[in-house]
Image (cartoon, rainbow, N blue to C red; front, top):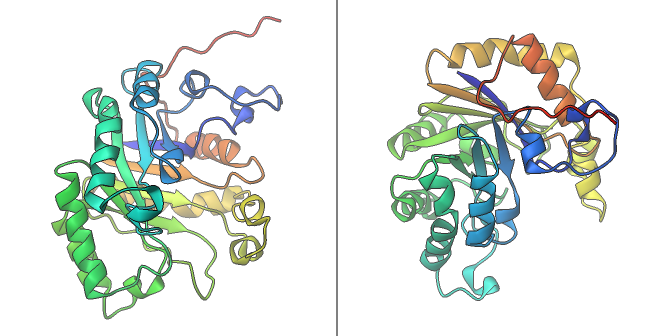
Length: 280
């Protein structure tokens, strides 16, 4: 099975094919794609009521890729959020996101680790702690440090992810000296995850105040999308699901790229919300 997702739901007005520059609602988004990446928990864990609302206003088969909080990925320490420990943050995350789990709508928890999260004994042990914290909840790991993919460590890294039942996040992103990982299309469990950030090298390397508006400013060409298809199709033979997430949001290109790839792969999604006719 192949699924497609976008990062957030509000930024993709082109899904409506009306050219209207307005924020989409989650129910509107769920008319077109079967899952979405939820980024807001990285900055602050949403309330239980928010997770409950999201579970209730989406179709039964709709699912969420929920980004782990920045304390859970060690971008920041627990003391910066007034928490006593990592365990407390993980417990809070699990308690509040429980409605998605109960509804069968949690596809995976996305751990996007920072560039300074390199290959060290401490970090390897932390990955093991993450599994202990999560119990049997699904999780996916995205590295931003190239050392994990060096020949000396690559197979051990993949073996560790398999042992811990973490999905390996396959990234497409500019290859800068720091803060990037190579494209390495290997699955480590039954959920293979592609996360496509675009190829804007200058934007990716931008350290200025406007980096958020430039980092993912990229529109994949049809030929570039075609280049992913052999790996996507191959991994459907190894995993139960291949989820392709478009994160090239800066210029509003993610939705169009996802719909194009859907057409190229001849995908039809079932269980979506019914589309409403705009008569006026």
